[in-house]
Image (tube, rainbow, N blue to C red; front, side):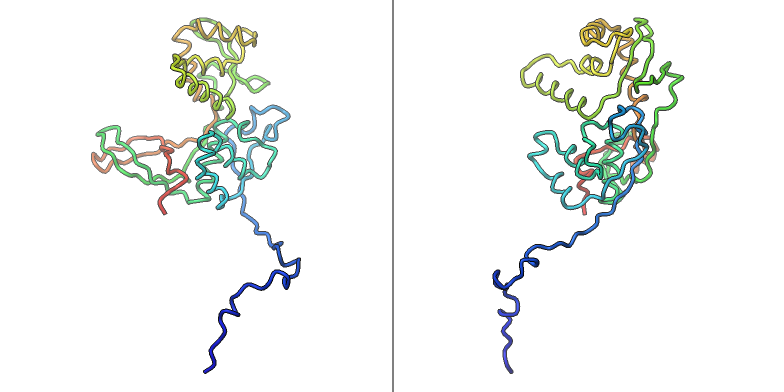
Length: 281
């Protein structure tokens, strides 16, 4: 029986024999997309922002390209991994990840995780009743959205420029409060890290207040805001920090947790640990 020349059959053709049009493929593969509902509904973005008054944003499904971004130690060390990830999946490339408010960022990342790996999320949790540690499976698809619409009980009003206005109870100062975007949060993180490296006193509470308070009695100068924060009654400071989460539109990842050890059911916020984007396959 004649022996086949398999080497000839699988060998690469000479480059000179391949037409130029065949040297690169024009085949393109379409990646599915979806629309993500924005907790802010675009209310707090300025008029020149692409998401001004937008109720949703279009993103593409995660691909191997995004997995490369999430596994990049260089991007992680620079603190820009999630920004690059978000910008990679956004269809509208004019949207900067750092310009997004935290609730909208969270909604985008959650939707990307669900389309990438499914809604099941195994996380290690500790029962608040008995302290027993276990791995619990959460359904990320069953999340709610807090639009922060109910402001009457907080004594706050939403202004035309997308900020909140209220009177501090003890100081009686009229304060204008703004929501922090990704760039603000990154700045606060850098300030805190710099103080730690230089063995300086860390001031996370006043640093936060100086960022979220936009004006005091109509005066928006940074000197006035900083002077007010430094002399702000502790009652007003604590009250403002507590209600900030209520006025910040966000996704609600609070779930019922049934402890297998003690049998009690309590509410837990889904822990977004390191394996959020890297579940066991």
